[in-house]
Length: 144
Image (tube, rainbow, N blue to C red):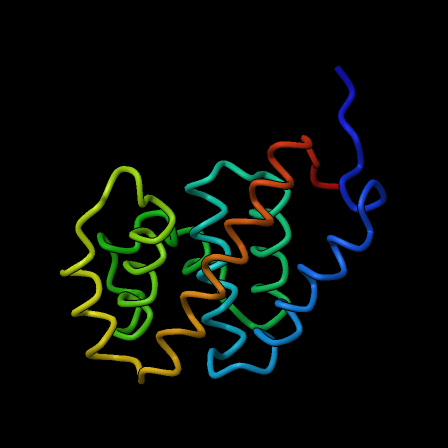
């Protein structure tokens, strides 16, 4: 069955959701880290459209192919800083809430690397990309 275009079906809803993105763009989370977080969440959620978009955006922003290829196995590589590891761990915890109800370990790693404001901004970023993933997967949006 052909799916609707969620962007044209409810433009007011997309405009409201996009307002969150406008805040995130000016938040305490730098763009290179934000793209890694978006990529990891999109990988977990199986969102082909968002994986393609955020890997492309990260590369345009100067991210190396080697690190982009390793995001899905970030724990097993030496390519990520302690701050990036904390953000990726928190991303996985927040994206997999149903599978990981215990947040203590990833929260402690996060708190060691991020200020209180950054922790909230990062969590908002993770929540927002999870929402976009659900829209794109649910309505079968494909990479162009």
